[in-house]
Image (tube, rainbow over all chains, first blue to last red; front, side, top):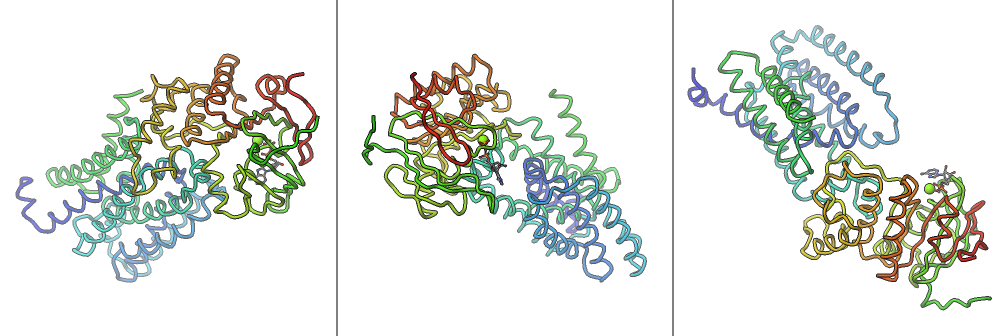
Length: 266
Length: 237
Ligand SMILES: Nc1ncnc2c1ncn2[C@@H]1O[C@H](COP(=O)(O)OP(=O)(O)O)[C@@H](O)[C@H]1O
Ligand SMILES: [Mg+2]
């Protein structure tokens, strides 16, 4: 089948729209993770999402619902502590990764979750999005765009000089926690698109590529968004045409862009 | 000679001020008064509480005891504190370069936040004009599109000073502005401080750990020791 034939199918239309919206917006939170040193927290949230997704599957609801619940809990808990707690990256990483994956497998086994669903959790299942999932993606994308539009200078100041942001009266803490919360929700969406272990492909990698090439926050945001769309939508199309797993193909496209950016600069 | 200080001539006055962090009291019954247009250098050992003193003046600490008066207004409430911060330019100690790519122009303009732009109110033409003017003053006009991360320590410190000045302050607080600079950039900065001080008759409080240097630049030098100000070292001896 050609691309045009695929685009006639409703399931594919929905997946394509979701890829464009998610790719264009969740990538805007990658810069937050880098600037606010949230890489450890993101790692913890990724695995909480995985576990939440597993619980969702085991209970027979959707993995997205389970993952979202876990992440909302996780980011509300971790956000306020992110500064006070000096998290040890190694321990947290080992604890969350091994712990949550092991627990997820126990759940799968005990609840008799079909292997295909488990595979979907790890590699993404954008083709199985239903209409309400799509609305959730569009809603989240809208909130992300709106936040950046209304708070652009405040966010720029919080990233550039958090101390000055505080004493000038910018509600820096609330902005940080709000962004972390949005990043958490984005992790849930990204899990659905590329799978639990490839979440970075949609959030972190486009932003990292953009940051290599940009000279200011506005450029980073525009380029992240553009790369996010190209990664998600491009990866989806390629995976259809070449009959490859969607999540993995999207990830490879993202990694490809990052690799290209390394050739261009430094 | 005893100088009776007229309130109208007074930029800043602290009496019986105590401040600190939680139970740890860093400043206790500290008194200090600074005339308008004066340049005061504050010396003291590491950990003496110099930065804490600036934080108290800016009302950035909880539980401040005693009386602080800034430009004639007694500072008692958070609203007073916000007002103080709108009148004061502050260059904190040892600001790194940060990770965010940002142009010199944008970095300086962000100092205007809360003055005329915030949230949905975008920076105005006046914000941009003032930013341009300050870039001229600190001599960074040619570098306005440069990424701050690629600047030298001296240039970064000039960005920080421009960012404080763009708020059109009446008082400028400089926390160890020359600590990490080589001799040449330090001289540039000294000239700059002198120049802006005369230009706007600014009141300047500068923390330093270099007594020699402080005496050169300031009208008056005081020591912070055991939580109090000790006067006595005159600048022009
Ligand atoms: N945020 C803080 N929380 C708790 N204690 C602090 C904090 N900042 C400074 N201190 C303590 O207050 C004292 C004075 O610090 P500071 O004002 O920074 O000294 P200086 O600027 O003279 O080197 C030190 O003992 C320091 O450990
Ligand atoms: Mg200090």
